[in-house]
Length: 282
Image 1 (cartoon, one colour):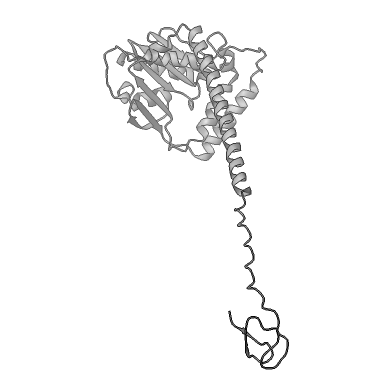
Image 2 (cartoon, one colour; image 1 turned 120 degrees about the vertical axis):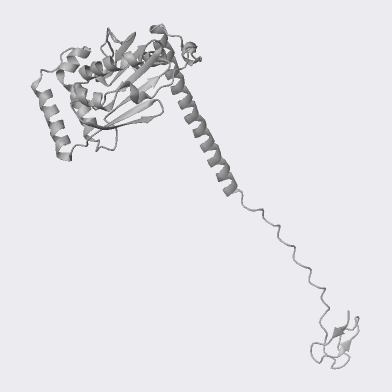
């Protein structure tokens, strides 16, 4: 490549040591600077990826633990249900098998008219509405003051009664204490009229309803002997009154009816009166 004097700019030969124009010494020709080796491209930091992978692993482990916990809880419930069914002589397979009974479809509201319900409850029932196999009965809504007064009265009634001394009180003693009525008044106080006062549900397989009641109560530690359930004689083929008189299940000729009593004070008497009207129509 051509050379030039750095002092005068005259062209020079490659072997010259002094400028042929001005005589000044020439600087030795320097080789083209070698390009600096490019620094190796540092791979993108993997710390974020590691964090993501670790976090994912932790979440996966927690998820497996949660799933395992749910499975374990479900396994325990399943065992309790199976044991409860066994204690009551109930075959769970029979409950899940299709019923051989002839299907009978009817309007559940035909089992008890709103006029009959009003007479039994001594409360006007303004409408009865069918919803599938259920009939919902609506009463005239009480004012907030009336609902609060009913709850206060229920509290006062409980206060007048002697406390239950037995460690495993019978359902009759619990009923006499007024605790059940208090619980139902509290539930009813939240009803502004938009929810039904009580509900009747019809089933083509009443044995399933009876069995389901026994299994559910047995699975949570209750039974007929401890007072969680009352067996009512002379009503249908079988009749069971649930804890705190919360519901009545009646089976007759294979069909069944469940009456939801959670908002009705003096529920046992009312349930029996309703059942005596309903059973002949099942």
